[in-house]
Amino acid sequence: MKLRLTVHEARSGRESFRVVRPARPPAHAELLDDSWYLNAYLDREAALLMAGLWTLAASSPRTLVHLPLRTAGGRTPGDRALDLVLLHHSLRFPPAHWKRLRARLGPGRPRTVDLRPPEPREDPDGAYPRHADDRDRFHQHIHAETLFLTGSAPLFRRNAGLFRDVALRGPAHPRTAARHGHYCREVDCGVRFRGLHVQYADPDGVSPAAG
Image (tube, rainbow, N blue to C red):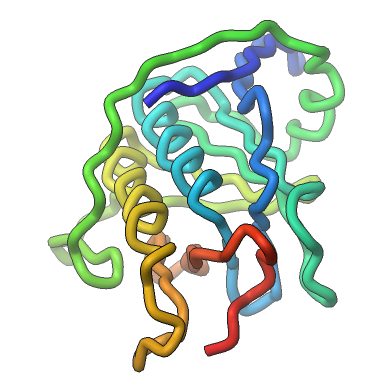
């Protein structure tokens, strides 16, 4: 899996941070906050890109992985469009500093990375075995029109396969499916935060499918 990226370096206070973005943001993708849910609508290309970016976040703990989505796709009336930032918890980057850091990023420099593609997640509903005291969950914050998902490397790696599953199985999923009428998975963020509902969307329209 090859990812064409743009790498940026900028300072926030006394610290310097590396921010990585796709060289070309996806044409058909949305991340929407409708107050009750966080909803991502992705076509095949966007879902594969997400799988790559989540794999990258798992292997790059000193990097903020930024996916600009507010200008992609078609806007769904009444919902707030968000960008996405993935970061390792050890980075300890305050989301409140993001707007200032983002303004200082500049054009960046191109880079191509070759990543091993994640295996599609076979587990139903994105679940995986847990213990009652398992604290390995995503933490989320919304600041400056951006959703921040902070987690561990294993957590990013596990969920990268979820996006590849959407890319591989979503296009062939029958619209008349009894359960949903669309193909979707969920990134579980535990009981403290809202889950991220990830839905396959045809490239000719990223708004939610009827179902």
